[in-house]
Amino acid sequence: MTMSRRKAISLIGGGTVLAATAATAGFLTTRTPHSALKPWKAAGDYSEPRKFALSYAILAPNPHNRQPWIVDLRQEGKIILLRDPQRNLPMTDPYNRQITIGLGCFLELMSIAATQQGLGVKHDLFPQGEDGPVAISTFTPGAQPDPLFSQVMQRRSCKEPFEDRPVPADLATTLADFATIIDQADPVAALRKLTWDAFMVEAMTPHTMRESVDLMRFGKAEIDANPDGIDLGGPFLETLMLAGQLTREDQLDPSSNGFQQGIEIYRDMLAATPAYAVLTSTTNTRADQIDAGRKWLRLNLMTTRLGLALHPVSQALQEYPEMAAHYNTAHDMLAEPGHTVQMLGRLGFGPKVQQTPRWPLETRIAHG
Ligand SMILES: Cc1cc2nc3c(=O)[nH]c(=O)nc-3n(C[C@H](O)[C@H](O)[C@H](O)COP(=O)(O)O)c2cc1C
Image: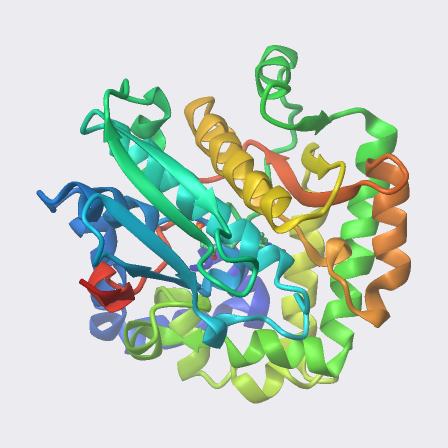
């Protein structure tokens, strides 16, 4: 996540930022975490068809950018996808529901990329039950290229305020094939409130906030060393770090100025939302969660194609006791009784944002 000049200045006051910027101009021009972004450059640079597809799959959206995927390539023409148990989010995702959705995004992106080489992919999900591999994916010839592939390199989760203009009706209609789109004033207002209230529960519950803060990477060196989690980088955030205004300690201390300012930024962002996209499922099996991920990925590629921004806001969907009231409200608002809301996202016109870090493909291959 990088931060705009406007935001950074509002965070600590213009004078300090400008002084710090002038003093460190040379330093600031070199703040891009090139190593952490290399996998975006390497995508497609593989002749072996499975690695070609995987080099795009690792660019999939996934919760807190944990990248919980490991692949085994020992069987020819197949990919065995495993979930890395080291990359769970036990506080905010105790049943690995969201982690599984991220793996669904990965599988769909793998399939879309494979079609560029004329290959179809059949996914056999949880063939040994939920404690075994997530999928055994078999590559077979004879597929047509998927047109959504053209959006893969531009797709983002846009964690920024959106413009104050509605989602045009024709675009909402197009997206209705991909998700439920909510753009009427009353439900949008109710969801703005819900997402904010739920965010505050996560922020004010020490163990859930710590989970996020532990995953924050402060600046280029930390981001390059651990290209996952919540990346706090770019010239202005690094200026704040240099000025001592953005620290890990502050992010854990609700009484600190840094924490309070972060909350304000989030409040503004959540409020600047003209519409939402929702995915629900009738049941809540692992296969449903994978399916939700596959749908979310296609939705995100389609919003990209339409020039719209999409941003998951998952706090109200999380399954821990402190969140229960908001979880119930979300389900009352968005799902039939007994169904599960798998994804909720902000939808609108947003700024172009940077790519997020990834671990290189080679580090995600367990065998082969
Ligand atoms: C299941 C799921 C839940 C997510 N929940 C949130 C969320 O609550 N807040 C947020 O800012 N991003 C959320 N994200 C987005 C991830 O943070 C994002 O995909 C990741 O950082 C990689 O960035 P990218 O999508 O721009 O490539 C979620 C993504 C997935 C797949």
